[in-house]
Length: 165
Image 1 (cartoon, rainbow, N blue to C red):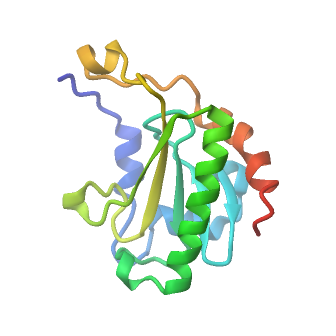
Image 2: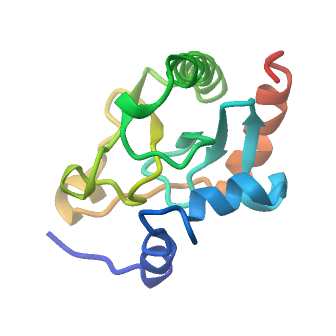
């Protein structure tokens, strides 16, 4: 398998600290710069944004407003809001991209693959039948044809029109 290096991503994901000081997701939460940070929607408990390093077109994340790394430490209200946002995002991604399915996942801890440690977030990745192409199979390389800014422009009106605040 070919290994592709992305030093920009490394600097991004290692900028987080366990205590929240310097956490990239806390900085985005506090910045209020929706367009610059690709934030699609905010609720009092969570926010939804475009993943800057997507696995597929339409890859979004739902992020807890509170800097907490464990699902069981979120309040029932925080977890419920995250699941409500996941359902809304599933509908929007399925309609906007005509996705055949959506992978949803939360990586808890470094051993589980969490790129941003200590700040819980859920990934939603649209999928299509046969979306593993020859580059992925033979070259062990994934091609994502849509840039994150284009994804943001496509999805922002749909999230804004969802009726959630």
